Image 1 (cartoon, rainbow, N blue to C red):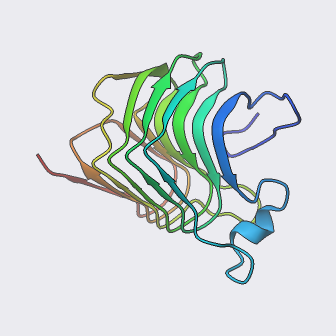
Image 2 (image 1 turned 180 degrees about the horizontal axis):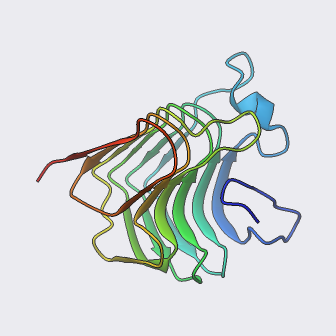
Length: 162
């Protein structure tokens, strides 16, 4: 499975997932302003258990994911938060445990995984098999403490602030 694929067929290689929001069955709706409503995922506690588990996955543009605690207890391909859409604000989440990535900005069909802001997410206690953050999309901004970024997109930037 490629890094930017999302397949959930009850169950599938991408499950189990803690919280999945957005346009899972029709990804084009996630990037269509006439269909997509604003989504906020705030103050949840999620355990991601499984080899490819995701704590929170957003399949839409403009999602806000704020103040959640994600404990990644899966395998080497699991992750904390995955954002497939664009222009999301993902801030003040605490992600710990062990997995491939704490945070990811990925593409999927019409969804570009670009223009997202990841601010002040606490990944200090996350043990990444690959990197703390993976950006496949473009023009994403990471703000906060220094962490390891796997940048596969263009014009992604990290602003390190102590």
